Image 1 (cartoon, rainbow, N blue to C red):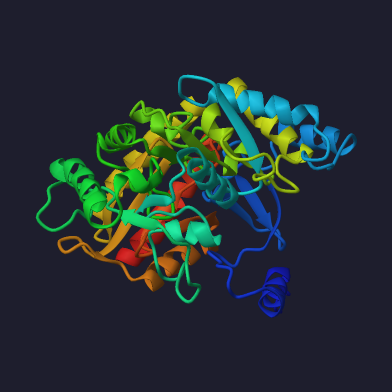
Image 2: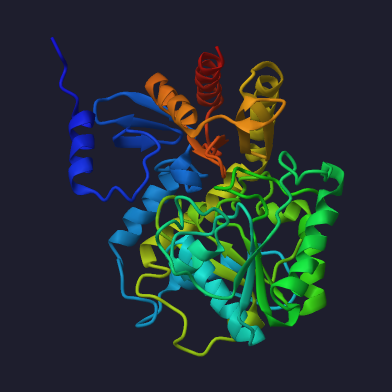
Length: 437
């Protein structure tokens, strides 16, 4: 006797009603979740290594977040910060400003999404410098709005057919040590990329016309690519030399993911502006731009904002997140998770023919899958998709990334229990072994 599947019926409904422009990593339809586990509408249990694409560093439905939301829901749902202020916006701003590296007076402002934060960071930089140009990097991902698409370093499918794009955006080389330019060693990659950036100032845009350089301290959608040592600090020097605003995009890397509260802390880099999102709100929509008060005060009053930015509910969640990080020492937990994941990933790289690279910082870990280790030919995206679906079938939600769509990345909650972490890694190993056979 066949059992009727609620998930299958709902997935068919999704196909009829929802735009096919939105991607789908799995065909799981979730009913409820707790910490690092989710249950679908048919009652099947999964370990979650995706964490809402990095938004759930404190886990699904953390009791402190739920309690804060319940309390706030009975007091104030919305008014718009432009109409009337409310206390938890200012308190969330204070907590965030205190956490941002850098000397001198700092300020912040809240938005709804990472894309909004990036767009507005560029606006602040342009207002402050009175310049127009912006430099991003190949393989970068900064969002899906028009300016963010232009900043993104991957054309298909992100930008294909969606132009024309924003003007005065240029792309430089990011140091991807597993895939360096032909003839360039990993040891020379930092110097090479910084020299290519200086060459860009001669061939594409003058340094004195550049308002900002925006960089991810670890590339997210680009495949969890960790820059070679000295690159971020080198960018800081370039920006200081030419009067350029350095924007560090920590939307995915921030809030402990890499084993530091901010990924840029691994190189001691102080940004002019930082874009923040995802795990700031524990699943509630909130993002921010924070940094130099002089830059954040450069735009004309009324030029920056939005109806829902820093909504009272989202601010309540953010305040709970700050408390949870302190009380549960989640930055240290990220390092513990990262050591365990790295050990397993390095072992697969050494033993499995399809695992070409193991990389990352803290709990932000990835493996790059290849068809041939010698040539580094990427494993076809269809086969990577099959591995992701096999993991879901076995009870693990995991997602891919990379310019070739051949990277498996880990964004499990930092609150994940050891048994769930081990179970998830075992499932992923089984799926990889099956694909390697």
